[in-house]
Length: 484
Image (cartoon, rainbow, N blue to C red):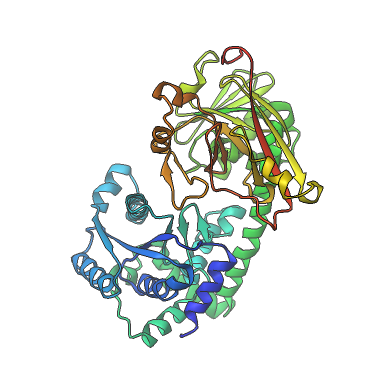
């Protein structure tokens, strides 16, 4: 399949999975999918100026696992690519975490891949999920009664993780390996029906193809694409609505306007609840449809002061005119120092947002490019440390102001790669006692502005920019105290 590299290049460009000069960790198990992925990425690496690093995790579940690791080492060295091999006793992990072997293996793999990426300062992690895996994922989600997000399957990109093969079939992979004379390892556990996904692959899907629709795979992939677009639109809409109903957000807590929330359609309320749990730092794992329905009934019927327990330490507490999503039992006291409890405030865009806890008033303005007189006007907007500009259409909303967290990293403007925020603070000679009070503006999960010091790389203003977001930070008079 000589055109597979070109197909993958087009897929990468379509979904903007990579940027030139990136370092990419490639997860390689030794199977055909990951072997082909590494080979293809190596072939196209010059087109994107990529630097690759192979990562392989030995699950210590099979006698052949050591041979798999040796195979991956040899293959990576033949290509001249550095490799890291790790080990995880997945059976013990499954017992400790009370998970199935499949789930424990997945958890261990992604934890390992992210660890390697951090160690080698990589910006992306590439995994070999292909179109067949997507079909199986969507079908499994249908069987468990998933919503639009589950029916959209695996996204081409989630955070650092990218899936360049999502539009590639298993047949294309095997044809490519055959044409390149590539060998691969076979995991005997994939041939059994002991695991749920294997049963679906070897029993249910063949039955559906034979008895109902020979093109069922393509139909399911089409469903995933449709639902992915629908879900992305609804998530963006939910974000805009959240800005209207969210009163406050901090570490371990989100506070929403009860009346405004209950006036919304149930479909929007369900999404807002899930989003509010994420905003408060909670986990959506094991949170099912019935939990969400119980939440809505609780908020509509219960008296103020009641609480509802949800999985993984999440609680819902109803007030008179608001309700709180509280994570891990936290219930911050109003007088608590917000810089110690993890301040996080949503910025009004456009508009003004006072953050008295940090002593700043934030002003956000969106201007059309054509309304600026010329490049001089644009340059003047960058002239001070308390004012920055971004390409508004490339920002991920809502924007938030927060304080630093352990492990924070930033992509400084004009530099390649990321830098630890702690290191940047040291270079800027910010006194340690002041660092917890430096405001950070975030777009999505990315720090885009260290207020008063440094702009990040997010959404630069370019010649093609149409709308410019101007952010200003003004110091408030008086002491920086949280108002009760």
